[in-house]
Every structure is written in C-alpha cells, then in structure tokens.
Image 1 (spheres, rainbow, N blue to C red):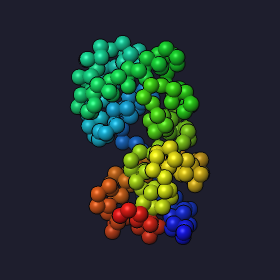
Image 2: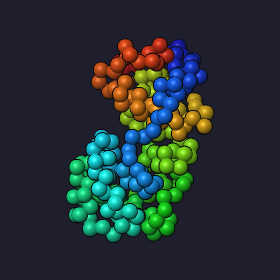
Image 3: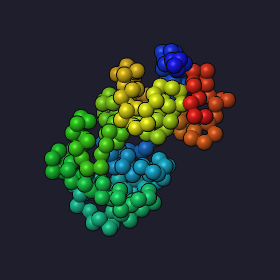
Image 4: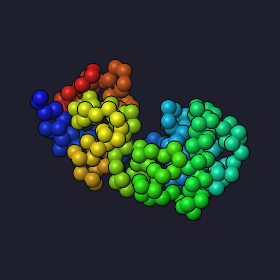
Amino acid sequence: MATPRALLALPLLRKQLRQAYPDARYELNWNTPLDLLVATILAAQCTDVRVNEVTATLFPKYPTAAAYAGADPAELEEDIRPAGFHRQKAKAIQGACRALAERFGGEVPRTIEELTTLPGVARKTANVVLNTAFDLPSGIIVDTHVARVARRMGLTAQEKPEAIEADLMKLLPREEWTFWGPAVVLHGRYTCTAKKPKCETCGFAGLCEKIGV
C-alpha cells in the first residue's frame, strides 16, 4: 500500500497549517480553567456558539467548583437546558465539580491522569482543558473534526478517538500538540466539513488523499 501524501509531506503540511491558522484557538469562551472544563462538557453534541450563549450567564452564577457541586440539580438543569441533554450534562458537571471540591481543593488539576479521574471527563475533554487553559501538551485534542480530517488526509486509519490521538502523537513533535488540535478543529469546522467539504478551495488539497470523499 502506498504511503499517503500527507505522511510523505508532513513537514510541509505542518508549515501550511501554521500559515493558515496562525492564531488557532478553541472557540469556547472561558475565564478560568473551571469555566473551560464546564464549557467543554456542555459542548458535547452542541455548537460552540450555543454553549457560549449559555455560559455567558452560567459562569457568573457558579464561579467555583463548590458552587456547582452545591447547586440544586433541577435549577442547574434549567440553567443549561439550551445546550441539550441537560439532565446528563448537569449530572456530569456536578459530579466533576464535587470531585474537584473534595479531592483537589476546588482547583482543576494539571495532569491528564488526575483530570480523567473526574466523573464524565475523558481524554478529549482533559486535553481541551490542559492544552487550552494551561498550554500543556498532555496529548492532542481529537473531536469529530480532527478525527474526520486525519482520516481523510490518510494520517490515520483508526476509528476510535484514543487510537487516532495515539497515531497523531507519534507523527507530530510534542511542541506542536497544543496547536494542532485547535487548528484542525477550525479546518474541519469551516473547510473540511462532514458534508460537501470545500476541496476546491482547500490549501491542503494537494496533500490530501480525500479518503471517503
């Protein structure tokens, strides 16, 4: 089997990604690491735009992990209802915040090993918080956009997020991990879309295998 073009030209791909998205950032609004953790939980199956609308009033109301942990569950559910799946997400937020209050002094820990012990916090959520809030290369954010782009380009043949992340971590220098996730999220969100990707205007078209397109 021939080596995918994106793998052969990975240094060029990395350079072009930097040029295309020099200021790449995760599009969730946040002020504190706790804010970002909560916003990332809310972002599951919800747009960042909608999450940002919800958190504009949510964050001032619940400024600490203890505030979330001690909230009336029904009231918290109503506060986050527009983000969808409000019962499950309220339970996840309260579970994570109780653990923060009880085991970490209310502070968001700075290791992926500790973060993923929180209820409802898997590697993707932990990487969002550590990469974005602390600029720590704990791993590479792999959401639906990153997974789709990586597979289409031929950078991985894996399906599960953890396996895709493992492949990308082998391919990319550690110092690029915190940039790669947000940049590829933006590329997947606005150019390499799930339906009708904009291949004709994509700057990476010559490096992409277009697998599944």
